[in-house]
Length: 414
Image 1: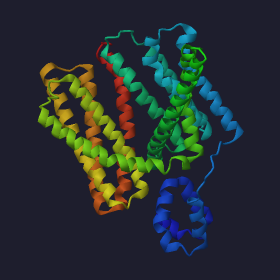
Image 2: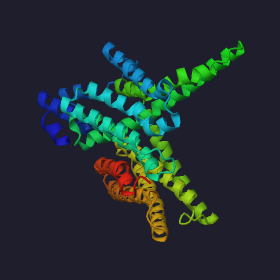
Image 3: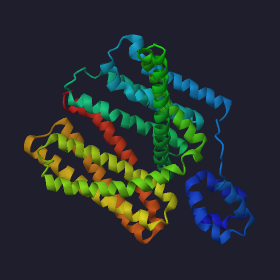
């Protein structure tokens, strides 16, 4: 990319094409090259364009605001279906909670990117089939395959959201990395909005209590539920229209939490040895172990996506490498434990799901760890770490599909 920029400084049309094809990659390459080309007028113009700091909050166009309000309202309607229809909430929400948010967010990106009708129909078809399927599964609270399907469905719909986000560039690894980065930014801004909303709700309920009006029974189902349904949609809108809101916060979060999580994991592994905890025979401990693994994996991926903006920082790269190594060790323990449990007590839906997930995560982690090791010598190689994550996303999607649609059939809905 650097050579293409250098060779086309006097070709505005080609520079614009390079930028539109890969905005993140273009900016990264341009920033690395700028010291060499800063005397060029075209380079100076592009520098100001790429580094322009927007201070005020932009609320987008009138049509976009109306569209966001509309899909937020629809999300609230979906969340309120049990109240409108009399469906048992304990039946509805475990199966359909993901449909409250992900379809509306996918709709927003499809609308914003003006997706071709063919791709739009694919998204609609997949969401409808998933909704019909999950609600037709036998209502058996003791069914492991039903529980697994309900757990994996949000992950699958998340990949559908990714398909909508990437638009016409689904195969672009950089676009997939941008999607991961968007998720990190969305978590940050949604958390801030959630805290603000909780404070506002508490103050509102408290003020009405002072005048002897108990509104909590009205407020929670009629205000809070709609607000929670709209929260990630409004957060998405803010991240997309005002990227400057969190662009400086997310890298700081990544840099702060990477060393803290690394320290926590090292102390935790030592504590496991000291206390003699046994993941091989303790089912609950193994479950928590795997949840910990998934959380750390998310932190690694988020940190790498954010850290790539500052790929010249060798200390950050070293910390990420060490965190990946420790996580590989944890994954190895979890994987050996589940293999032991399968060899001792046979295959169950839960054990097979955990085994498959652990194998995929370990494979991806080892790719990431190897490429992080190479990036210690050459910081430019951090892009290949991003690509190793992005290239694995469709594989995770296929696995969630297998758990949702094949496991119930393979294990006779038990």
